[in-house]
Image 1: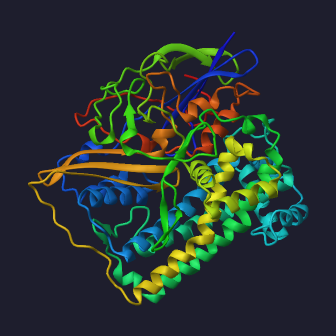
Image 2: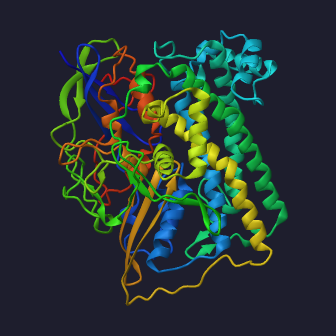
Image 3: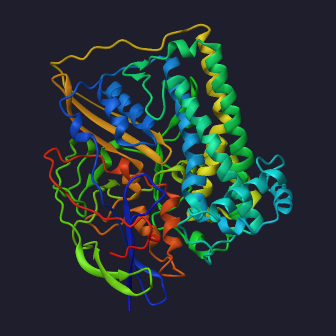
Length: 579
């Protein structure tokens, strides 16, 4: 007899997300549904405003990748007005993006996703001396793995465990789960790097503020370029950026990347993370300027059904969003330039699901036949697509980007994994570390290009005019930490007439479309075997591998002030909905 498991809310993400799966008697997922349960955002607010002010509003879509929304919104206006920004501005924007990317990748693995792989209580049983010696197996220059450092990490967490807080930030998790694979010593290495990453992410945030003025909501971008000319020309400021970049590169190369190699070797036989993924279509775009004629991620294209032999060019006219199973009017596919965001909330239905005690209990469930999510369903030429670091890496690999090809082949050789392993949850997690490594190793090219160009050119902003008698439309596309992001604007009478943002988590977390085609999250859960229905770590691990940013994916608002829905969350629960 099939049973329903509800995980709500999924924690350690940005925003509010619910997952429901139907499992058979063997605990294998037969169907899956993912729902965004809160509605927020800014697209409606943009209407009627001066387009030059819209980017400052749009960066508030999210509290994590604020800069990327700021940048792509600015690029959308520039595209509409046919503005070519100065070379210095392009380089500064790339340096700010580099800081964002490394910051986000490090935070994602250690503070959001890492404890799906690292069993924290197990680390308290480790021998620090053995763990310190083991660290050299994965890198010749390990960070934060000296015996004394590892002992202090153990003591810090043990003190939490013996306090009234329990394990503090590690308190509610499925520790001891059968699918954990690291040894106590490996877990201790991961724990130490978790703590070290708290320091590293602060350094990355400072890098963003050097040229952005502040973080997380920088202020230095304007339509036409950037305003931080004094910082660009100040050797103290640029040297500070360079020194911090070296710290980040060191951590990525000698902590983050080695930890992923360690996890890959230990989890390569764990069925829940090497199960083939559900959607094998991947799409990405070009981004991160290295020099005037070179981009790090230079491919704007997609691959279909996991075929690495052919890369197709993107036709932007084929990008649509539809709302068959989303809480909006206008079910038919719409191009972003013509997108609408009228709410049509239908709620949940009465049902039952597995409770924390393993028994069936009443719950409000997703209406699988109706509308069930505030996230729309983006499609490319009618096909579901995964976007994100895995897509960036796979499409670049298929397109023979030499930097990416070398990095991927090196990783596969070092871990002994076959190429097919890339098309798994393990592969997605590994691809993000490869992504970070590639950025960290090549970022100095962008930095030196800026330093050299400012010796002969100090221009940072281009002039332009907005003709109120003309109509304009434009889009800004680029890579956010979670994948391909696009902002689309129409300008009429000198103000914003319509605005849409199609973000990575909308692509990945989309519900079913009219044809029954599921988005990547949902498709990835089907076929998954769950060891313990009351501790569905396998579900959490797969969803976390995408690094959901639901605040980004749901970004419209009810301007009439109506109550859309009410939620009661038990913060002490184990993550399984007890309704």
